[in-house]
Image (cartoon, rainbow, N blue to C red; front, side, top):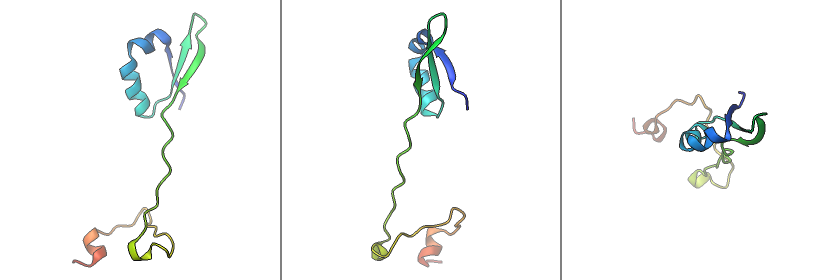
Length: 81
């Protein structure tokens, strides 16, 4: 996705709205002067690395990973059904 261009004056006038756009994933290129020279690139922060959870008694026996298409309720998993 190409970054959205915005002048310094527009950035100052709409700062709160621009922060919301950046938070939503938009990248903003700030340009300055008549020549619209790029002076800054505002991007959302990188996503934090995924934390792995330990599985109680199995904590020291390796990770437990569920496939993205795993479809089982917590009650079925525990055996409450």
